[in-house]
Every structure is written in C-alpha cells, then in structure tokens.
Image (cartoon, rainbow, N blue to C red; front, side, top):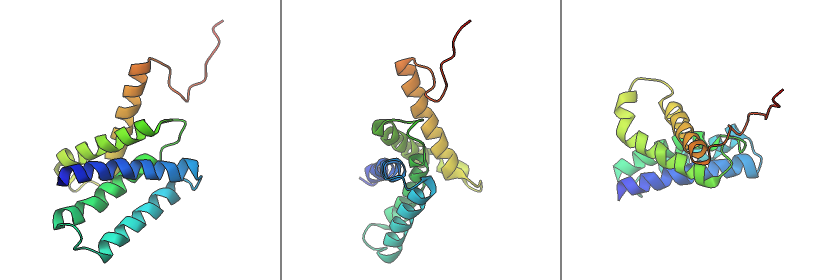
Length: 139
C-alpha cells in the first residue's frame, strides 16, 4: 500500500506541475516551487496523518517528480508521457535512492532519466524524428 501511494504521488506531482507550468503558464520554477511548498508545509504541519515512512518519503517523491513537470510541452506533449515519467521516477527512487546518498542533485538526475526514458519510448514507438528538430530539405 505504501509503495502504491508513492507511485501515485510521483504521477500526480509530475502531471500537476506540468499543468501549472504549461496550461496556466506560470513557468517551470514557479510551478515546481509553489506545489512543493504546499506539500512540504502540509506534511510539516500534519506529520501524524500518515505513518513515518510516508511522511518522510511523500514530500521527497513529490519534489523530485515536480522536476519532471518542468519539461516543456514541446518536448513531452502528452499528459500520459508525463505521468509515465512520474511512474518511472518513483521506480528509480524506490530502488536506487541508496546509491545516490551523498551526491547532490539526485532528485534532478532521477527526474532527467525518467523524462529521457519516456521520450525514448515515445520516439521508438512512433519512429518519428525528435519533436524539436526542424525538417531539412535534401538537395
């Protein structure tokens, strides 16, 4: 049950940040920071709502997954891909977080890996060129 809550947190966090960033045009940093602040303050104010494991890990997963939502809609144009990236982030966080101990930027690195995995799967499945590359004319 705890793990599924963390998966859901990663997915919701990435999608919420993506919506605030792209749909409501608040910008990547403002979207990530404001949502992370709300979740952080909530768990700081009410630490006994969940068990100690979730109280410690939900804010971390939420903050890390907001980095995914900072991506431009030109790079990841689909909510499904953003949610999938949040799911991948949660998997990496749960399985590899001890390897990142002592390294700065672990959440951002994990988020970048998650976005790259989603982008790669989308490109392989569609066999299209990268969305940000311009089409060139052959001479």
